Structures are given as structure tokens and as C-alpha cells.
Image (cartoon, rainbow, N blue to C red; front, side, top):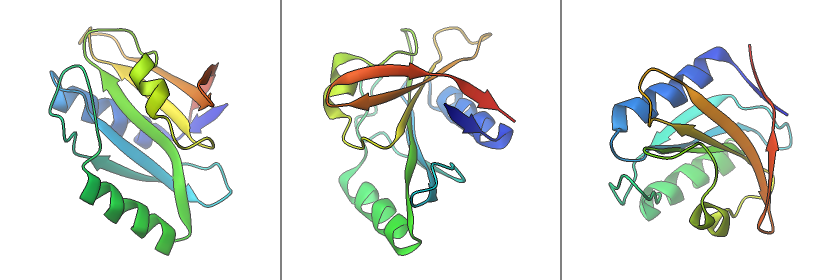
Length: 134
């Protein structure tokens, strides 16, 4: 189960809507080993694409280094889908490299509806999990 504070949930949705029609992406860091998302980090989609996202390599290096220095880890890795449901694509699954992270997807296909879902992706296996917002 993923427990998200309301401000973090709102920040993910706002970022996804702001970057639409391109996919948005980012991370929520938390204390290492805690599974507690705390620090929202919006990142640039280096692809600037409505169908694919990729963290900029230099930005990702800087963010992961900063997390390491702060004894944090990526608790949530999020991105948006602009025209499809909030479910990991084959590409998303193949690129999932943080087995301890919650992979959050938000669909911006309907501007009047928030569709946010969370998944664990380990060794290519996708498991949906409940999301609670407080």
C-alpha cells in the first residue's frame, strides 16, 4: 500500500496537468528504508513527448546524488500517460529499475477526472497496490 500526503498527491497531479500534452515525470524521496514519501522532486522529461518519458541523465545523476547525501531513496517514481489509462506500458515495465519504489501513474486523458494508480514492478512483474491519501 502507498500512503501519500495530500500535498504530494496534489503536486503529482498538478505537474502532470501542467506538462500535458507531454508526459510528466519525477520522484518523491523519503528516508532510506522508511517507505515514507516526503520530498517532491519534479523532473524534466528529456523526451518532451506525449507517449514516452525519460529522465535527463545529468538531472537524474544530480537528484540521485542529492538523495544519497541526504540518506534518502526514491520512494515514488511517477509519470503521466496523456492518452491512455494509468497503467504501466511494456516500456515502463522494462525500464523499472528500482524494485523498492512505488511506480505511480496518473492519466491526463480526461481533464475532469483524476486517475492515479500505484504499482510495484519487480523483475517485470506488475502488481497494483491501493493508494491512500491523507
